[in-house]
Amino acid sequence: MAKQSKNEKMENIVSLAKRRGFIYPGSDVYGGLSGTWDYGPLGVTLKRNIMNLWWKMFVEDREDMFGVDAAILMNQKVWQASGHVDTFVDPLCEDTLNHRRFRTDHILKDAGVDAEGMTMAQMDEAIETNGIKSPDGNPLSKSRTFNMMFETHVGATHDERSVSYLRPETAQGIFTNYKNVVDSFYPDLPFGLAQQGKAFRNEISPRDFIFRSREFEQMEIEYFVDPGEWEASFDALLKDIYAYLEALGLPLENIHELEVPAEDRAHYSKRTIDIEYDFPIGKEELLGLAYRTDFDLGNIQRVGGRGMEYTIKGTNTKFIPHVIEPSFGVERALMAVLSAAYTEDEVNGEKRVVMKFPEHLAPVKYAVSPLLKNKPELVEKAREVYSILKKKHGAVMWDDNGNIGKRYRRQDEIGTPYCVVIDFDTLEDDTVTIRYRDTTEQTRCSISELR
Ligand code: ATP
Image 1: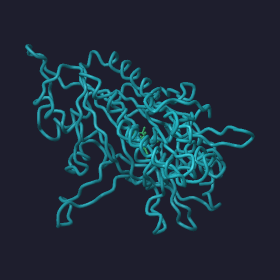
Image 2: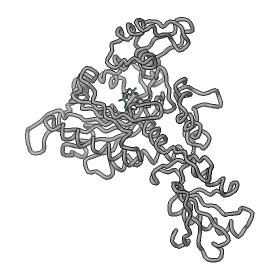
Image 3: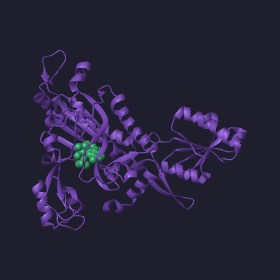
């Protein structure tokens, strides 16, 4: 929180998101629930536009990708075999006086010590040697591991056999369906399975708005390749990731590749790139691209006992395919889009806040207004124009609240690219004013052109 309050741009975005109906703190009326966020009318559309664009670019537009949508609750064996039950942990330390709990690597990071690659013992040592205290100024305990999966029970009995988890990633729901899809479609290698959906992690310290939440959405692909040809697919997917980030309107200079060094990678991974973004909170992970070898399918074959081998058509060549995994977080993409779009400028000597979303992401494409709302003839004409645009574009807002200047300010804040105003000239010559968000320029065009 302290970090956020220092960061004015982030604070402005959080406050605009709430004020204008994009994102609200979860369970707010009951005092909130840390790490959860609710999407308002504009937020849900913006988020959907981001997810639909991904689905279009990575699934619909391609021949080599197949979509799946697996259940969130899965057999506990999935999470045992994947290693999540034993190793999906973060280091947790505690304020020894008030017992508030923190992620040890975050405590170190906030104190300017990079904990990447450190063991838990090394982190504790760094806390001691640097004299680091809790944010409340008290001594910290030694660290212990904390498993981030939310545990639950399936069915009416609560025993070890009924344990399940809210999935901490969507990836495993893809691996468990690999064989099903191969049996139904028998695609040629390389091919990918893609999934979007909720993931849950009991983060020790959720923070930085939606960046680190306890409930969030992922968009993941498992791309199955011949082990000898993984590098070409890895490079191609990296290029596709950049095309998507560009379509989100993210400036290239804010995107960075972190080649994760061998000692920080999962033991099975031969290459991982974290794509980082210059968020207002600093440079942080936006998404990951990892070469996971045959780790996951191999585990399923070993533990589940089902053959995961792929047979090259017309041959006896069989092997477990290797996997390249691009893993996107929707909230992080959304936060990057919000921060790239957030702009302050000056119009006629007045400060203006404008969300410069790319047009295809903007939750509202057109706002339609009668110049004066107490003139029935203007309202009637404006309603006619509204219906025409609404039928064509869907994402059209009726706005007759306050004077025209106020309406423009409001539409700028929600990122509406075009405001269409119906005035007395419209009644004479069927032309309307179009006002452009980015330049504030106004032009006239005929209603038939709008059509
Ligand atoms: P971090 O190191 O930031 O905790 P991670 O490396 O654990 O992230 P992955 O397990 O690789 O993350 O998950 C893939 C993607 O899911 C991340 O790149 C991120 O976009 C998203 N993600 C992960 N955890 C969260 C979270 N708590 N809140 C929002 N998005 C998340």
